[in-house]
Every structure is written in structure tokens, then in C-alpha cells.
Length: 208
Image 1 (cartoon, helix red, strand yellow):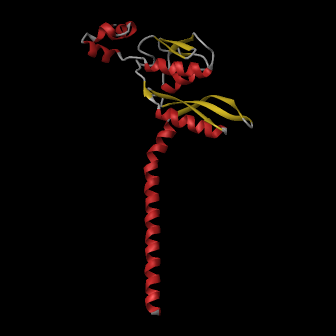
Image 2 (cartoon, helix red, strand yellow):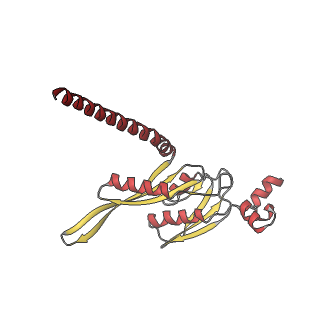
Image 3 (cartoon, helix red, strand yellow):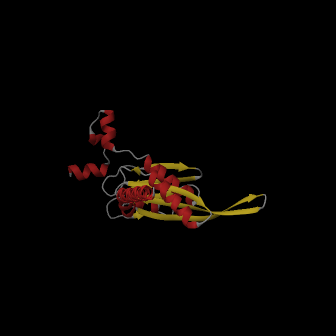
């Protein structure tokens, strides 16, 4: 009887050791799968545009929290905007960054500028974006500049026409970039020649 009990204890300990090894192997595999996500996060340009303390009046008094606005882009034509709220500033920034990465969109570009003029509105904020010649730089204010630079646009003219609220200006800029159209794809959809819809400076460069 004693020998049987010892053998059963040994078999049970061996099973536990095997399960632990399997858990460790699974953890290692999970870490390997997380590597592409970490590399992508390192390549993205993440900027904290605004942090504001908010207050909510409840029965026991005021409940304070923080709201963060974060812009994420790869400087190659992809950009996203996210807003996060939390009791602590780091948590609010983390939430905003995650939402910005999920909301990233592809922006059509023409060289170092945008293909055409665009105007968009979000709430009380309204933004006008105009293409510029190479070497002009980013002519933009506080709310527009982070979105434009994170997207990778190096030459652009902009004007804020509405509210000066940074949150509305950032969102209006993001909406304006989403309304941009690639003239090549638009010409293909309409069934016309590409040069009919190409910007005038692009025509001059191609035809001299």
C-alpha cells in the first residue's frame, strides 16, 4: 500500500510539472506574438495635444478626473485621434493612445502636401487646409500642427475659422484629412483623363 501511494504521488507531481512547463511555453509564445505590436508602437509618433481636469458633481461633492487628447501617426500618411478619460493622467493618456491607434486612417498625399483644398467642421471648430509649394513648411496653429506633422505632411497652409477650443480644432483637422480624395482614383471612378483632375502645379511638374 505504501509503495502504491508513493507511486501515485510521484505521478501527480510529474503531471503538475508538465502543466507548469506548458504554461511557461504558452507564456513565451504569447510574448513572441506581442513583439510586432510593440515594434509598431515604437515606430508610431504619439503626441499628447491637451490634458484638462474635469469635474463631475455627485451627491457626495465633486468627482475630479482628467481628459487627454492624443494624436498618433506614422509620418507616412496614416494618422489617428483619440480621447481618454480617467482618474489619473497616465491612464487617460494610455486610453487616448489606444483609441487613436484603433482610429487610424490613410490620408491621400501628393508629394509633401495635400492634393487639394479642403474645409471641415466639427462642433464649433472649423478648419481650412490648403496645399503649399515644397519648402513652405507647416503653417498651422496649436490644434492643427500635431495632426498634420504626425500624418507626415511637410508643406501646408491652414486657417482656423471657428472656435479656438483645441479639442474641436483637432477633431476638425482629422475630419478634413478624411475628406481628402486622390485625384487618380477619382478620375478612374469618373472615367476621365487623370490630367483633368490633377492640380495645376502637378501638371506643370509633369509637362514642364
